[in-house]
Image (cartoon, rainbow, N blue to C red; front, top):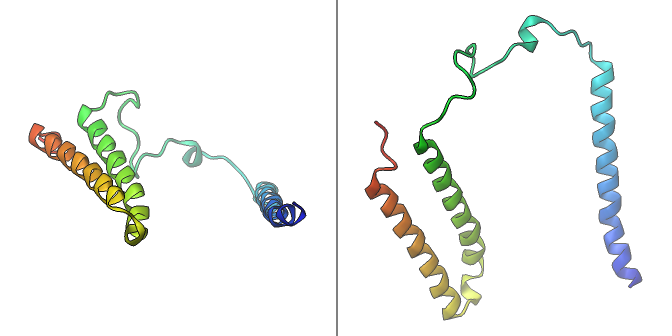
Length: 121
């Protein structure tokens, strides 16, 4: 039990030290830097241009579909990478289970493609 506490206490000390250094750097940068707000610094900035429309404008639903596609394929990669690492040690059940998962994702992608969700007008 004592050895386990010692191993985790090193991590705790590292986290305390990192937190202290982060707070110290933040406070030093806040107090040592000359701060003077002018019109350019406090104005809204949007991709190098002045904002020309209301920020509460509705977006096309295709933006959300692309975002959902991104999340789905990001999730796929987060499952696919560990699976590829342990592929040599997996049984047939693990292999076919992941293959079914990939087929389901591919069918969903083809469905969205056929519905035209990926085409811009």
